[in-house]
Every structure is written in C-alpha cells, then in structure tokens.
Amino acid sequence: MNESAILLTNIDSVPGKTIVEHFGLVQGATIRAKHIGTDTLASLKNIIGGELKGYTKLLQESREEATSRMIEQARQLGANAIINVRFATSSVAKGAAELFAYGTAVRIE
Amino acid sequence: MLDLALFLSLLTIGYFAGRVTEHRHYKSILLREKASLRLPTVTSNMLPEVDQIAKSFLVTGSCVISIDYFKRILAGLRNIMGGRMTAYETLIDRARREAILRMKYEALGSHIIVNTRVETASIFSSTSQNGIGSVEVFAYGTAIKLKKTL
Amino acid sequence: MKYTPKLLTKNVNTSTTHPLREFAILTGGILGALILVYVLLGFALEWVVVPRIPQSVERSLGELFLGNYAVEDSPERQYLQGILDRLVEHEPSQTLDYQIHVEENPMVNAMALPGGHIVLYQGLLDRVESENELAMILGHELGHFAERHHLKGLGRGLVLLVLSATLLGDQSGITQFLQDSLARVESRFSQRQEQQVDEFGLHLLQKTYHHVAGATDFFERIQKEEPEGPLSYFFASHPSPANRVDFLNELIASAQYPIGEKTPLDLPE
Image 1 (tube, one colour):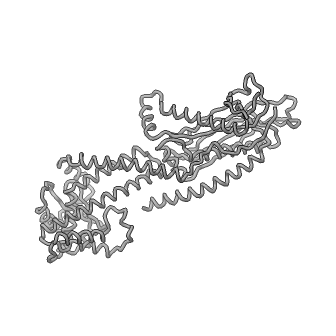
Image 2 (cartoon, rainbow over the protein chains, first blue to last red):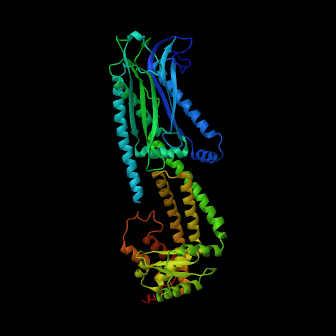
C-alpha cells in the first residue's frame, strides 16, 4: 500500500495519472462547537459586522478534520487518491458547525 | 424536586433507549452495506462507453433521524464548553449511510451510480428556541444499467 | 478500470469516547465553573455591596415588595406589633422601623422583607400557643434583619438569575438542570444562616423575658405534625425542626439560660 500522501482533486481524474482501480464512495464528517465565550463575542460582533475570527477558525478546523477522516477511510480501502471531492456544510445544532467531505477513492499510477 | 426527577428519568430513558436503537441501526446498516457492496457508488462522472449503456435514471434516498434526550442534553452542554460534539457524530453518520443505502436500493439492477451528491438539512422544531435534534440527509445520483456486465 | 468492493472495517466518523464519561466531565466542568462564579459574585455582593445599601434604598425596596401584602390595622395586628416592639427595645443598633403584617394564608410561614417588614402567615399564627414562642419566631426574623440576610438573599438571587439567563440562554432541560443544582448550593448556604438567626432570636428572647421558656415549642410541634424522613430537609432552605430543637437546647444548656413561666397567647378576634 502506498503510504505517501493521498491526492485530492475535485475533478473526474488526477491530471497526468491514470486511474487503475476505484473503491467507491468515501466520506468524512465532523461536528464541532465553540465555547460560550466565542459565541457571545460573535453575537456582539454581529452588531458592527466584520470577520468572525473564532468561527472562521472553527470551520477551518472542522473542514480539516472532516478531510482527514475521509482520507482515513480511503487509506483503509487501499486507495492513493480521492477524486471529485465535495464539501458540504450544514447547521445541525445552533452554534455548531457540521462539515462533510466526500469523494471517490481510487488508485492511480 | 419533581422537575429534577422527571428530567433524570427522561435522561435515563433516553440514554438506554438511544443506545439500543443506535446499536440495532448500525447492525442493520452494516448488513445492508455488505449486501449492496457490489454496486459501486462514485462521485465522479465515470461514464462507460455510450453503446454499452442500456438505461440511466435518477435515484434518490433520504432519511430523517432524531437523537435521544440524553444526547441532546450532552450536545447542549458541549455547546457551552466547545469542542467536538460527539453526541451528534453517530446521528449524522447513521443518517448519511442510511440515505445512501436507500438510494442504492432504488438503483437495484443497475451497475453503477455516478455523480452521487449528499445533502444535509436540519429540521428545527417549532417548540423550543433552538430545536436541535434531527437531521435529514438526502442522497442522489444517476444509476446506469449496462447492456453487458462491467 | 476495475472496481474493487471493500468493506470499511473501522468507522472513522464517530468518536470512541463513552457518552457517560463525556457527560460526567461536561456536567462537572460547567457546574464547577458556575458555582465558582456564583459563590464569588454572591460573596462580593454580600461583603461589598449589601453593607453599603442605605436605609432609604432599603425602605423603598420594601415598599416594592409590600405591594403584595395587605396592610390593614386590626386589633390582632396591634397586639402582635406590641410583642414585636418589646423585643425591638432590647435589640441594639437597629434604625429600621419594624412593622408586622398578617397574611391570610393557611401556610406555616414568616418572612423578613426589606424595610423592616415582617410578614406572618395566618397558618403560623393558628399554630402558635404562647407569647414566648411567637417572640422566638419574631426574634428569628429580627435576626435576619440584623444580619441583612433579606438583602443578601436578594443579591444572590439576582446573580443566579443573571447567570442562568445570560450564560445558558433557553436550552430547555439544561438550564433547568443547572438552575436546580445551583439552588441546592444556595439551600446549604441558607441553612447555615437560619441557624445563625435562631441563635440571635434565642439571645433576644432571654434579654426581653429574662428566661427562654417556649423557645423550642413551635419547632417541636411542627416536627410532631409532619414527621419527615431524614433526607427531606437536606435540600430545604431551613434546617429540619428536629435539628433546630437540638441546636437551641444545646445553646440553652451552654448559656445556662433559665426557663420561666410561659405567657399564653391572647389574640384578639
């Protein structure tokens, strides 16, 4: 099995490589919340507008975690690339970010 | 005192009932996933040669799952402290896998599902201010049936 | 291109932490933090703010509360006021104008409201047999004024309200749960306070009547009326009657207060 980094693309192929085998859908999801302090600050910031740094960080962390979980699934299947990766965000609970990453695990050469 | 007793009993019922339901659901999901393993589901447009295709059609699958009282409280507490909401992880995982499975069962007889998309929506209850607790997952894709086996 | 069907052996999308463990950690952490803030703010109010509240503010606060209680000058009220005035004469350092109010309510209860107002419930008056035991109850309420408990209680109640409203919001069961837990902490505080003012009342009884007959009568009667389990008073705002009787008897023994003749209660109709 290829232990090096898994390639991610959001198109149907990995440019310059040939897909030799595919393993189907892989998915990674996570849901995280910020503590009440950040929530309160954010609601104050809502009055004057601007970037909500706490939430930007929250979403970034969540996205990274969802991606790494998806990559973990691909590794389990013996893939070395994930093509056509899609990201989705949903608000399942108030103040929490739910991130979902999914794609098709493939082996390239 | 009565309020607290009611709360604690709801919590206990929620915990045990929730665990049993979750366990059963996972068991059934694993079984059906194994059975439908031969049908590849991909997110890309891996179209076979045009002359090989017998027919193609849209397949969908959806599922709404709610969490138990115990996990709702747990999630509420986690919302105060911040961090990973583990209480919701299984809820969403179950809903997604179930929706994908239902989509696959709709595609029975075909050979591949391409361009699969998964959407998540939360259903807010009108009774409480932040009516958390249930998610709807909707999965859809194009099923392709070939003239001869892949 | 070939397709290799493979089952995923491990679910990476869910955590392995046991939910009960997480629940314990979260509840412990949040409750701990809340209680800390509550106690700190409560003490800050008790020691910094309450001693600085002027009497005039207290009086107007009292009028705010008194709106709920009928002020009606009956012979009964004047008789009770007489007993209270005798006690107040022996009560040092008081500048408040103490007033008795009788509330037509079958509950056995008495309250100290800001501004020197003492509200006695009819249910309590019906159960009292001697002037001495009534004086003990009034002395107890006067103790609350001396220690300014009526204001401190208000202060902590305010902190409780602010904490639960702003921090927790309206999160259905959670707020209820945390509020209940905080209320239990508060009840432990108040049981200590009640003991403190029982002691105050006893000393005042001795100063006024020169003996302490009847000091424990009322609590003994209540105890006989509703024999309760050992735990039923654990979370209550007052200690159990049995504990109060024991505590008072210990005090009487150690101070060697004499027990004299009781004056029967002579309530005008």
